[in-house]
Length: 302
Image 1 (cartoon, rainbow, N blue to C red):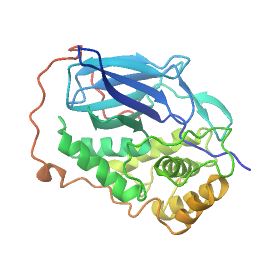
Image 2: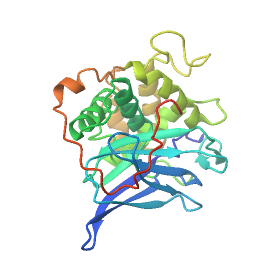
Image 3: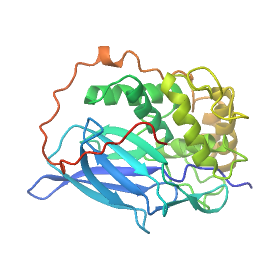
């Protein structure tokens, strides 16, 4: 049974309140394999005003206090010279190098959030459509567009996937939200077969592919991101890998679910052009609860 090339640097972010101060804590941890010594930054709705910075350290877990801030949050996981992630294809830790970034957008009050290549696509569309500072309406719309196009069979791309590691075997993944998401992420990573860091390779291609609103392996509909391309027909390639992953690791119910094409991409179109018109802009919350620092999440790096 061959290794699954899973995105082992997906993160889970939990929002919850404590004590009489009502200060919000945000906890982040790798969900699909430990990511060590990576930086996690939390920004306000503008993607520039820093709320908190933490390092995953050797445990792969961070907790940050964002104070009284309420509203959209931009979260980024960044690599550096010391950061590593566990790649199931290689069966070992590999570098998560400087310049590597993965984003999610959400609103405070959401209980748990996964940061994955799909949430990163929603962020890229926010950049492409010049939606910053984000409103909660826009955050919901952006995440829904990606979910409806690429993650049919899931309730939300912010859901927390089942942990998938070297101990995952046949029948480990259930036919539920978490199990389906784990299959989808594993299938995405399989598109990077033959690369030295498959998951990271696919993430980088998607980050250059997604801004034009169509997942086709090309930059603005022109040249391919890589040669040879990791995929030519994204929807067909991903559907094929979804069925293969489910056959290897899913329960009978999950295998049947994927054979019926009920999980995965319905379309390669993730264009968010109409979001600004559909959403009335929320009034940004007052500048409180953060450090006041800037430096921004940025948009060019990946």
